[in-house]
Image 1 (cartoon, rainbow, N blue to C red):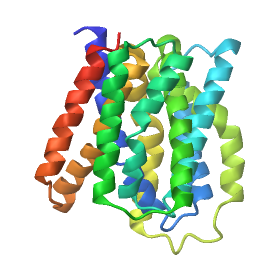
Image 2 (cartoon, one colour; image 1 turned 90 degrees about the vertical axis):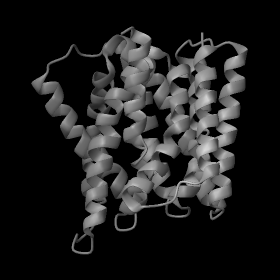
Image 3 (spheres, rainbow, N blue to C red; image 1 turned 180 degrees about the horizontal axis):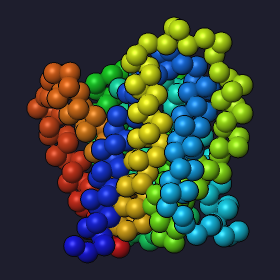
Length: 287
């Protein structure tokens, strides 16, 4: 199997893991303060990263890598989790899908600016069309929202797109799990004191769903998902594999249908097929 196919497989696994992140965050912020949730999930993942780097020693990042690791930390360890947690206090997780549909386009743009990707013009046609389809479909499903939540989500998409592109570029030299592990380690000296500072006086009012949600976003959303995602971006190209994020909302809907018995409509199926067509078109014209 060639490296590009491996990139798509790893990217798909990462997207599948991330597909439950926003619903889990929505559940968690029902009981946890958004600031505490942001810093505690990064702290938990940071200690896991320390354990990984201790058990599997790796070469240390060079001074030239530090700026990129800092950008990854700001983008995906702090920025996206915090901004989405704040947004989800004002909007539903379904409404946030409108903005997740723009994430592949943001990743592709930063892939050009930061990772040196140079897709062909037709790539942008498929990327914009796919983002429009996802955002349009999401708007037909849920209209509830607020301008404050929307602004938080726009900022979150910008931060995440930059963090994805920067991490994908750095993974070409450091490796996928190494990038997110070093980024978490870099953030840990700041996250741990903040977690202690923002810790609620009591946890007696925290329900089991919020605890399970915290465990998911700490282990899977902050660490395991990135192991596959950054490896996929490095192998298949940031702009190219980044288009897989277009199917993330539909994976979430399929998960809801499987676990919660929610209906999958004909329109949903048709839009999903159209989005897959756009992903395939973007892949064809990525290089």
